[in-house]
Image (cartoon, rainbow, N blue to C red; front, side, top):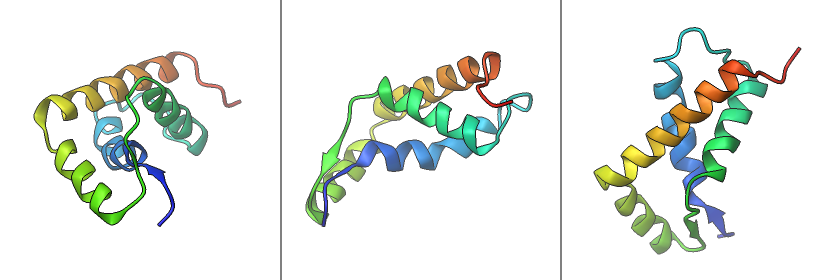
Length: 88
């Protein structure tokens, strides 16, 4: 197994759920990528390199305070990208 920032998996998993609450935000690939990158830049990375590490990261991500922070950062990124989309 290669090393991976497990936070990417969590953000990808939550992105559609949060975007559904913002009907006026563009959901093109470029905007989705910008939202994910902005959120990830403001979240503490969770790198794993083993299956056991991935399991511990998954358990840690079930913590409600942890989930609230992920949602908060994605929502902030959605609002920023909605105001200033980079696509044409």
